[in-house]
Structure formats: structure tokens, C-alpha cells
Image (cartoon, rainbow, N blue to C red; front, side, top):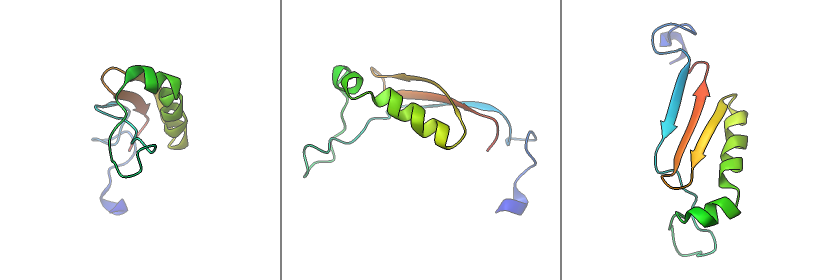
Length: 80
């Protein structure tokens, strides 16, 4: 509810660094599977970190890093 949200910069509605663990794409080459692509070399080849960087920009966040070995995507936001 918008009216219950604290003002920007107050309480939890402030700048934060967020790290999401285990962020992997679904392998669309195997149509009947929902298997995640976790192979670091494959993630590098498909530029998955660059893709997440573009997603981060869409919600006006600042991309920090993507670790292909752990699937950790880190970014910063000014507020929620």
C-alpha cells in the first residue's frame, strides 16, 4: 500500500546493496525441463552477467557484480 510506505530515505526505504544468491537462467534448449544453467563457462559464453546488468538498469539500480560460480547477483538501489 503506497500510503503506508515510509518516505524515501526513511526507515527501510533507503539506499541498500542487495545480493541475490543462486540466480541462474533456465535452460531453454531443453524444452521439457526447468533445469538451471549453472556451468560457469556457459554463463560466461552467454554473457549472463551483462544481461543482469541491463535488467538492473531497467529498475534504476546500479549493477555491482555477478559471480558465475555462486550465482550471486549484487546491485545497489537508492530506495524501495
